[in-house]
Image (cartoon, rainbow, N blue to C red):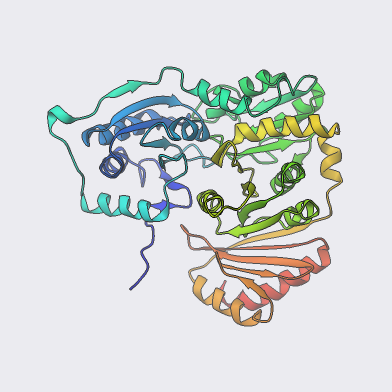
Length: 451
């Protein structure tokens, strides 16, 4: 039997260009499938994209057609909707394309426990969509829409209560929501923590006039300038749906996301001993910095849903799980909720700096040296590439949870096919640049005939 694979859903929901893959018809069908599978009361929300209103109305129509009542939360971060859904509603749906450009939109489906829907359930949605298999109700049994009220405040309060009162007093922060959904939340969270706040791009605009939803070094140059000019301790920026947060240090430098993850992970592990869960693509800096505290790393496939569900599974086995996340600014706090949360990460940086009483730039500069080389290759020969790598490096320690990760004492590498495109990605990391480059060349020589 061949294993079923997702066709519409990628690592984080369905995503594509509006008017091509993503249409109101498709979104309505996904809504009818979700409503058929998770009947009850469903919370829905969206990011700031111009296509959001058309698509969220299609989603609401599909859900109501199956008898579901819909809680309309309007514009809000994905983690805010996940917090609202968690153990309160039967499911949730966010209309978002996260970090993709404005021409894109998509659908993330949230389960009752606040985590994104897993692969098996996503495949069932696809099968229902392709076969038009929906449990539609008669006219007298269709659902209704219930206005949001002020549910976003529940999320803001939920984040703030995890921190000591006024922990941010004396700390100045510049916030860049990038005209995305965090315009509603992050400034208020940090103000409630006592921070002095400046903002840039803190208004909703689905045309994303200032920068792309994906935070980048180039796109965050105005944020960096503002951090320096205001004397802020750091700047924080979000992607379109604010499940991720990235930072600018007090010198105006972009903090590479794996280093951000490492700094926060080290602090968390200094407070509590246990397991950190992260994908095989994450920097080994994490291992290096948390080992002295008696913590260890459990590796998963790439994707926040796999991290979140692994964290839950380990907890169910009686293990102590203290932290999780990805090396892209998407961090997961298990005592808060099991999803990436950009607002929580912004608040965590406030706590970190207040506790360490050091500048962010000094903390970054004190990290051990690390060089990570990255490539992506357009190729339809992923299977051949993996076979060649597996044979050439058979004497090394191999992890095949997602692609092939090669672990050595002084370096590691990951060769991983994309789950949604004809791409193969290569990551190589070492503390020594010459070792990293030599390892990189060994792999490239092995796979050159396939790329």
